Length: 74
Image (cartoon, rainbow, N blue to C red; front, side, top):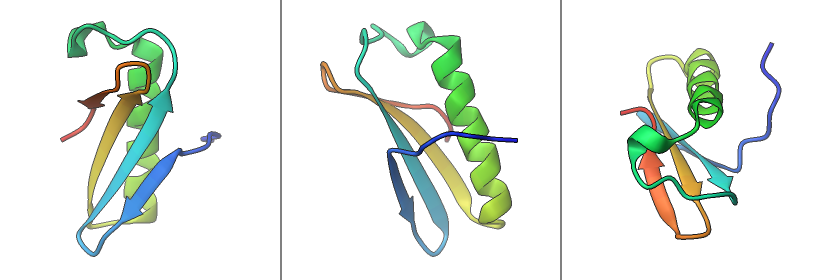
């Protein structure tokens, strides 16, 4: 079971992009992204892969304080 609210979702013919906004501390590097944030996006990507089979799934985190965007999945 997956429960959550996606902040932004872009559905295209061959790919789906999901972005979640974060308002807390901005990680200084990709390695500093909290495990909980990474796990959330990986769960979203896995769920979207089931909903949209055959499409590439791209997930990203946008930390709004900087702003800074991190790709979580390719």
